[in-house]
Image (cartoon, rainbow, N blue to C red; front, side, top):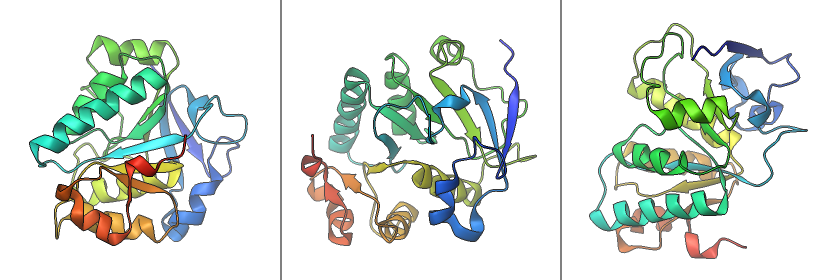
Length: 213
């Protein structure tokens, strides 16, 4: 299935101008989009609810893996709109769960999306054809992911989201540094209330149980 890649510049009415309040000078000049651009969080967006960003370290305790899978199931069943890079093994599993639902999903890889070959699953193809999957990238001519691109992507994803969930961040990890950065923005940031997430909670990340209905 062929999908046109749309460049969305800062002058475009589809450009989510609110991200400039968080990224400031790092606000991308162009966002590259494949799929239903009406899913972008903006005025007249088709998103009906909060847009949750999902993050999880590549390595985390078994307890957190199970909880994260259950959270993805909860989001699927409740129709919660979700955004993420979905790159770590746990995040990839969340994407597989979410794609079996009917809610909007925004996928943002840490690379350019020209000639992207990994869009192979029937669920991903169906999500695009049904208009509930949007693929966004802030990169051009970057065919390979890297730690630097992943950090820039994560900040972009967090800036677009209205609420942020970090399933796990080990002490002294890049994910923990990322949490410190986005907490300064004042956005709601949540995690599981677990001893495994002591470092996140000590930073000020709220337990997920405190999410208001």
